[in-house]
Image: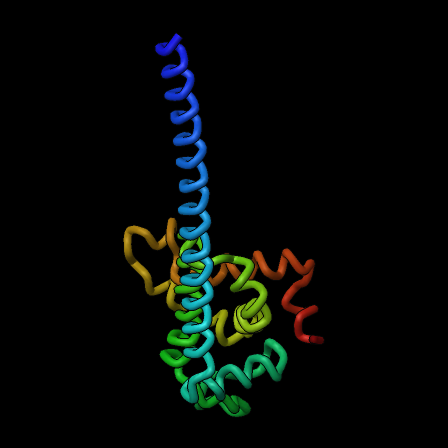
Length: 176
């Protein structure tokens, strides 16, 4: 009888230990998820701060305040009002390329990027000078990964996903 009683008590202890292990695992998983969300938000805010820097104010304003044909790039061609260089545009859209890598690698939540920067990304993607810079960068890329991982491909993927999600085209976004 004592042996049966001891076995029952050990079984209860084992069940309690299993339940406590499950609670601890759930709490650990929740803490890890919370840390990931905080890290994602922190990374997004850092990139938003980068976009708010003085060096990007002009290009951001030009893109967001005008249609897709608005000239961003300085040119000797009559009628080109832009004051940015190809390097300025490449640096600017490089930020969106980085964000695309982070979204693809699940280092930052797509929903956060979408909620905070989708319009900025879409407008930049739709600008004709941005498109020209991307075409020229891709044409100049002679690397072995040029086809499988094209220059600014993650920026392109983000912009197209966001436009599709909103059922909009570049032409439609000009009126916003």
